[in-house]
Figure 1 (cartoon, rainbow, N blue to C red):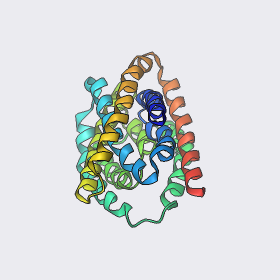
Figure 2 (cartoon, rainbow, N blue to C red; figure 1 turned 90 degrees about the vertical axis):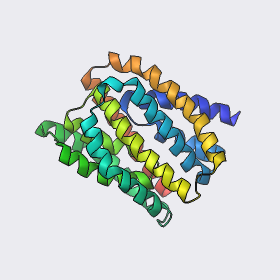
Figure 3 (cartoon, one colour; figure 1 turned 120 degrees about the horizontal axis):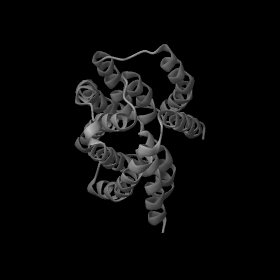
Figure 4 (cartoon, one colour; figure 1 turned 180 degrees about the vertical axis):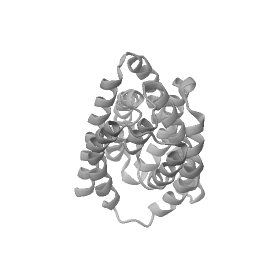
Length: 240
C-alpha cells in the first residue's frame, strides 16, 4: 500500500515537474524517506530523476538547444562526479540550510535579472554547469537553481524544459555512475528507482499538454511558487 501511494504521488510530482522543469524530487522525497528510510531514499530518487529527465527530453526533443547542453554538460559532468564523492564527508543539514535560503532568495533575484534584460552566453552556461554540477552531486535536487540561468539564456517553455532536462540528465547519470563505482548503488535500489521513476515518466507526458496551454507569465509565476516550496522544504529538512 505504501509503495502504491508513492507511485500515485510520483505521477502528480512527474506532472508538476514536467510543467516547470523541477519539483518532482521536492514533492517525492518526504514520502520516499518515510517508506524506505533516508539512506535508500536518496539513491532511489537519483535513479527516478534520471528517468524523469529522460522522459522530458523525449517529450521536448525538438526544443533542445544542443549547444547549451554541450556547454553545460562539459563542465557539469566531472563536477557532479566530484560532488557525489564529497557527499559522504559532509555533515547532515548544512547543505539543506544553505540551499533553502538560496532557493527563496532566487525568487526576487530571478525577477531582478529579468528586468535587467541580461542574456547569458555559452561561456556563462559552462560556468553554471560546473557550479551546479558539483551541487547536484551532493543534494537530491538542483532544478530550482537551474531555472533562472536557463531562462536568462533566453529559453522558455518547451525549449527550456527540453534543454534543462538534457543537461540535468547528463549530471544525474554521472552521479549514478560515481555512486555505483563506490558500491553505494546496489541492484535492489536501482530496481526501486526504476519502478518509482515510471510514474514520473507518465507524469511528464501528461504535463506536455498543460505546458502548451500556458502563457509565459503564468509559466514563470508557477516556477516562483515552486522555488518558494523548495526553499521552505530545504529549511524544514535542515532544522528538523
